[in-house]
Length: 92
Image 1 (tube, one colour):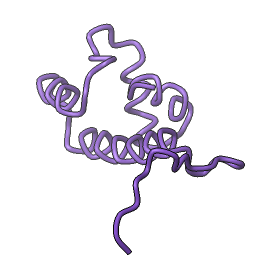
Image 2 (cartoon, helix red, strand yellow):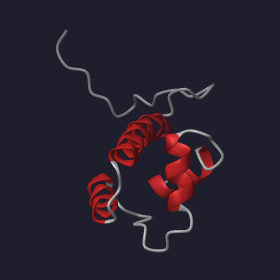
Image 3 (cartoon, one colour):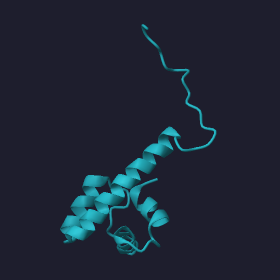
């Protein structure tokens, strides 16, 4: 899931600075919806985003990365087991 979709699902209705950012992103047709962190930062800066907006973005991005990392590894999911069949153990 990209950052834009994650923001819309997780923060559109939150009443904090990250939620404010999500609500600003939603109607913005120029927002880099598939952008990486650097592309989104550059976009926000060229739009004249204030320091509070940039702080909210950085906070949201850190949380997004943590949650995306958990989704990839399956951690936090009940019943998930690690597949070790391809792991090669060497010298003990």
